[in-house]
Length: 86
Image (cartoon, rainbow, N blue to C red; front, side, top):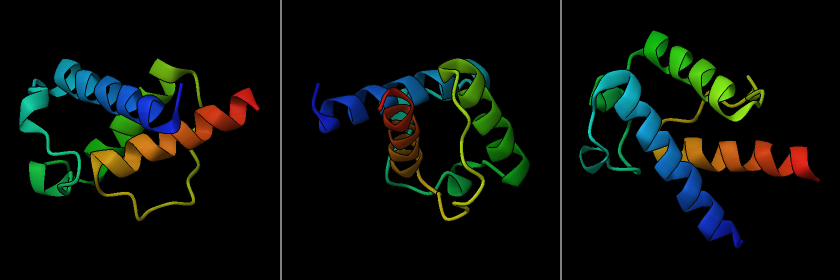
């Protein structure tokens, strides 16, 4: 599996998780748009990160507050998952 394929897989999984938790259809989520502009406040983003950790069985680092888009979040998930399998 290539990094692009893995990234698209994580992105799709995150879109599905958002749909499950918040009822936002994946088609409405631009991976490169600010999640805050879609209505995610800081608390919602933290709760979503906890949901990601539960779903994927990973621990997301707290040292990257610059993540603002779904694509950036998917890349961070991929990085953590890759580190766990290395």
